[in-house]
Image (cartoon, rainbow, N blue to C red; front, top):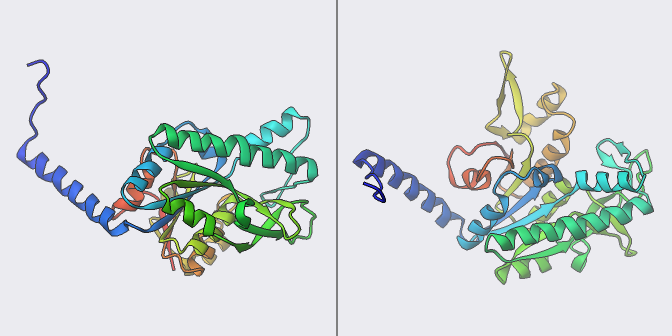
Length: 292
């Protein structure tokens, strides 16, 4: 009859009940814990995924998510419109004074406030910050054989502002900018910045959302995602070429988080609907989990 939903079979009801019960057990176990999530520009621009909704659901469940973001593709496009080419050395954007103005404008402005708006549209409350606010991410000039300009590396983390904002019921949204001892702005690698913040906050998990499902390995000619990866096995994967290029800084950020006391780090696809919830609240997860 129209308007009447078909009844579930007893077996289907039992199966759904078991899934719900298991999920609630995970939720209860995670209450009051902090999860640092890093989302790159490619993930945020895809228009796919349910990141904002997942963050709001986590907050509503009594968990404290903190979002750290980059905005590489948008920065590159704006530089191109201004007639300024982008140059990268070992994956880091060479950042002169003019480029730094664009980086700061996009990261702390359009990208950051856009994410805040997304979270608010999903019914949540969010506050946008950069690593400069409250000296959250104190940086120094990146040490390299090549002068990268105002590219920085995290020297100190002062997470008090993030902790206070989170305790008041807001989701902190942090742009990956740093501030030097002299007040100078620095362009930070968002993976590294997020890992350092996860350590300083005593996070229970560090999650990297990427445009790939996780870390791959070749198995008899077929590529498969490595479900669990021990820190001690990473060096051999790098040496063998399994981990290379864009995955290297993500793996390094995960290892630094683990060394700093974060129990586990995760690399998952940000394009899959509710990927964050599945990774946190199911036993198998969907991406690659790194453990000490």
